[in-house]
Length: 299
Image (cartoon, rainbow, N blue to C red; front, top):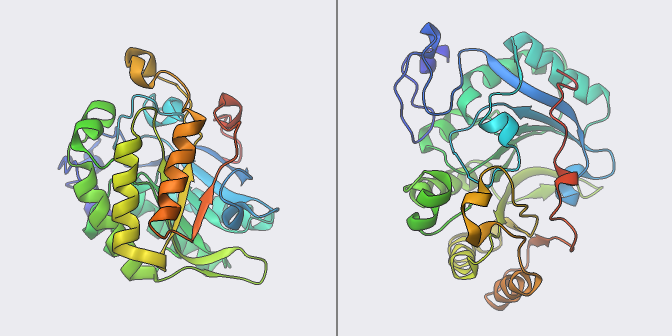
């Protein structure tokens, strides 16, 4: 799979750079995996974190440039440590030994070939946990297809419906085009969600949507797409945790927390169109206290 790095087209940017020779494209990722944190995480959906925690691996760099990114230190500022694929495999096994319910790959797209090799190695050494692909949704069908057999649960975002907003806030005018098709491939690949006796997800798709201030109409269009396309085949996680961060101060319309009444309106709308399988968040999630420290723990 390392040949995919010779002319990198892993994501919709299709930069075509030769990462094996040190070239870097839009995301800034090199030939080695860069990781900023690997630890048990307790702030995912209940069926992901449970009480034991999700074994999250936070990868550095990203193929989006969200102006409000809560993880901007690692996604856009290149914070992290380069590691080998063998070390990544060992990290998976160490998380399993710590009692993780799953291996949760956060922002993994630009390291897919290396991750696949690490999963093979780890499974040969006894990794038996479900593997979660926790991504922005800005994916190609080809990359998702390549992951068949490696990923048990997909946790994609669908951030925007309108290209106006995806261009303005994430520099990706074609975001919905790619995200909508990628999620269809994910659902076809892993099927409807299944859970163990403790309610922990073992297989399936949870689509996340973090509502942005002032974009209630756009969020409703996303609910229309998800439920109209998949019905009860997926779970929808409607999130209110938007926290102004990074360069959001340059965009006054989103440089503020989400209004509680707007979030409630979106939940009411989702219920009105028939959504049953979903997760919502309580108040008080808009805080930087929920941003984990990217201090190389577990790396």
